[in-house]
Image (cartoon, rainbow, N blue to C red; front, side):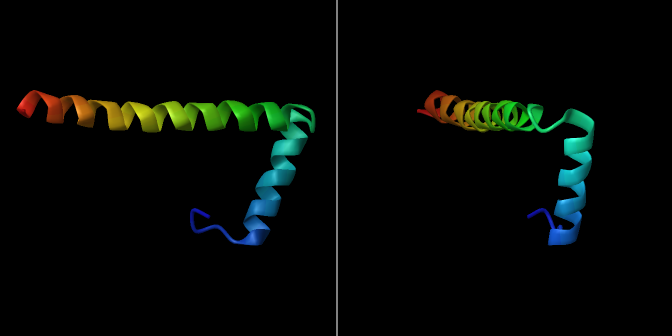
Length: 55
């Protein structure tokens, strides 16, 4: 995962829990997932529009 080993992931997780608290982590994960999904859709959509213009 992004060239990180398990110790690094564990440290990042602990720091995130300390900063945001255990109740906020699932909310942040959901927001991040939705953002990534819309970003991927945005990348695919211009490609489809660009191919439609050529035809």
